[in-house]
Image (cartoon, rainbow, N blue to C red; front, side, top):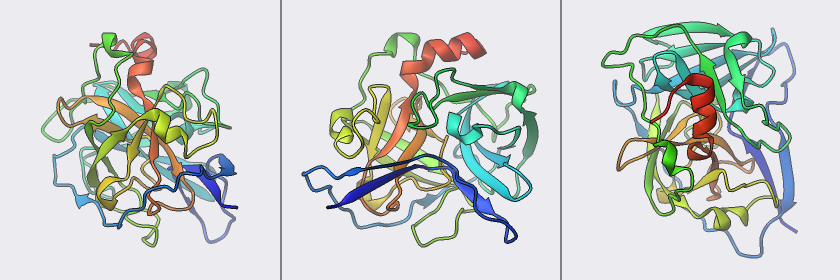
Length: 276
């Protein structure tokens, strides 16, 4: 009997003096009868400076032993959008702006938990409503720091099946690579029908407020890319927030699941005042 294990795509670094702290929930289920498509894995592409000015890195301190890495997106001068599981039970977060080199940001700010707004119905056990807003000091925009557009409020029911979208992140570039990559990587993906995506996961895990991407062209988001934006190529609007994938690795051809931003446009508006 084959078993599929699913884990969020956040990444945790561990001190040599301590044990690893669990970063996210695990699901186990029998694989569907349909054999998942396999791809020949290649790495993503290296981003150039200023290519993704809306992309931010998130650096979390869990305790004196453990640290974590996620991504997020700038949606206004004072708000960042990310995944709720990235900041779950965190006291604060460091936000890295305006760079493709995670170790050399143009701007870095520290935000405490009073300015972190997880969705009130976020469920850590199954990653339902995996979305979060972070309120920041006013950030001036320039060529390297800009906001990403969100879809209009009237697109809540819109389906994106078959569309092309782009993902970037500082996560692993392959299953055998180091835990994170200093230089931002990106790749293009095809959006999969959510009902097809549900075949790969526990019943009830992939909801209608999810978007899945097929790991097309042998590329996949990986550990450390959680919270990053899924952006439509045709209009450069953010339609997803990266949530989870298969614990079997990033090179297995299984779809990766994002929180569907259009399902939360009213929530984003109510918390941040950002809407279109």
